[in-house]
Amino acid sequence: EVQLEESGGGLVQPGGSLRLSCAASGFTFNNYAMSWVRQAPGKGLEWVSGITGSGNSAFYADSVKGRFTISKDNSKNTLSLQMNSLRAADTAIYYCAKNFGDLTRFDYWGRGTLVTVSS
Amino acid sequence: QSVLTQPPSVSAALGQKVTISCSGSRSNIGNNYVSWYQQLPGTAPRLLIYDDDKRLSGVPDRFSGSKSGTSATLGITGLQTGDEADYYCATWDSSLTAVVFGGGTKVTVL
Image 1 (tube, helix red, strand yellow):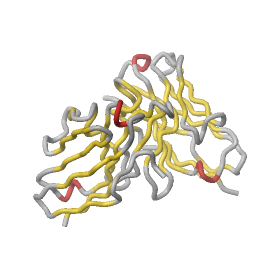
Image 2 (cartoon, chains in turn yellow, red):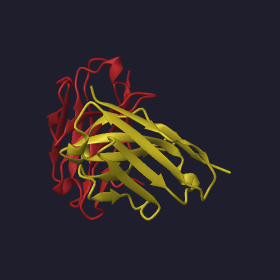
Image 3 (tube, one colour):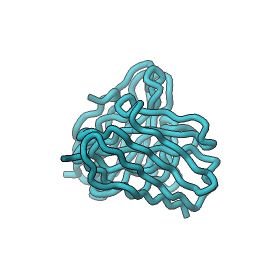
Image 4 (spheres, rainbow over the protein chains, first blue to last red):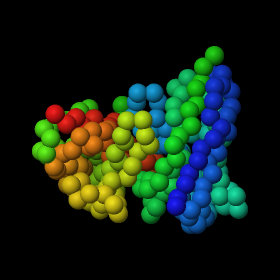
């Protein structure tokens, strides 16, 4: 059974940093691309970043480019998102999602972790 | 403002049919596959349709997807109360080199 469990969310001040993690199990982690998708309170879905199965190529939404870094540790079956220079607009539930085929197909999702950026 | 345009809400009576449109451009829907997601209140999204019209295993055949030009459509027949949710389209945008979502459509069963 595929399982994705996010951790690392919390309250952080504007300009601060936070690192999210996603522990994956139930599938061959290094064979699949992974992504982070967020949802601001009461708003729609926004793709944040994606990374290929090997971890060699990463893609970012313009809204986070230069501030967020996605990484994939295939030896530990863990996906991470390093978030720097956080803004109030980054407040959202962050979902870890498994891709299949390409980055637009998210077939499994975690429950999400809440990030709140506020002073 | 989302790159992909969806109606904010649609509604229909129990047992009837609804369609949800997703409008884009050549750089996204016009040249890339579309996926559709269902998000029930308080839960993570769920993939329903991928590659424009393929149902994920386990998704009822009441759900269907289609695409023409730069627009895609999700159809739901035999509406059930359990179908009340937000629905999102998604695709790759070749100009942005990013995944883009529609703004979401809330389905209400009357």
